[in-house]
Length: 388
Ligand SMILES: [Zn+2]
Image (cartoon, rainbow, N blue to C red; front, side):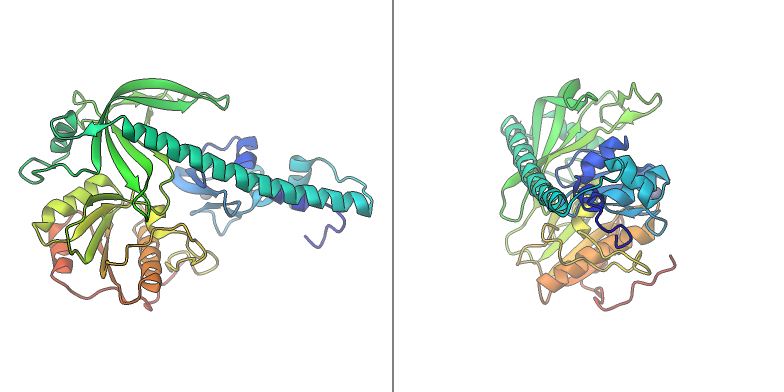
């Protein structure tokens, strides 16, 4: 910014909340108090584009070396395809002629605004957690409900899983809400849902993961057509609350020292039923970003899988975990997925000395059993390689 002396606008612009700037640019992202994901406004996809309110930055995993990352002003340049001065004018209006005192006052206001932003994010988070806890208190045990039929439909039969984990519950009339386009919410469906509780490090419920059930559909999940996007549907699963750092603890046998973790419930279940009583714990990490935490970005680092240790909210396994197994889902971008999982495992290795880690494809019971029988773990010093 040295090319713009006495211009208070860059500091002001970059103090604008990234969510707000994304809103101004009409970028569609999901809900979340700290992180939001969605398709990239430049290259599309489903969830490769992310906003982080804590760092006040954005990142597109595809465009990151092509202007696809940075702060609020970078985001304006990226989406509008304009220069830095143009982005400043667009976001702040023309450069004002100001005295030193006025400049100082503007800077003070920018700092104040930043602090207010942090307070608002904290409040939003607390409210989301309260909402999640309210939903949880509206549930009953899953045994004897359609949750059992739903799991059976997904290949997790009674024989494979004689008892439904307590982490899964049933809500009879779960409300499916979507943004109404006017900062409010609108209900588009109300019906039975499987509710999985996401617990934080201290075992406190901070989020709920809901799957709306409709056994008349082949996959057992509700199908909600999008009126705004003909041919597309709303996801049948949604997470409400603060999931970062948390997990859905499906089973945690007494004395377990191995934690097997997958991104999705089905993946984790598939591994669980392949275990056949070897005594590992099975937790669902809810999403890849949570299992990985923030990674170091920059030239040559795309696939390196190096954790950003400043991310204090990322998932860290409990102290009893001596062996951490991350399940790798089939994904369109296996190298990127692996880099993310690698970052999560390396973070765990740094914070839990002595812990060993594995990444195994799922669902393939054979690979998992190899791990459970104990074979070559990940070498944390191994290079990630990078072609980007
Ligand atoms: Zn992109």
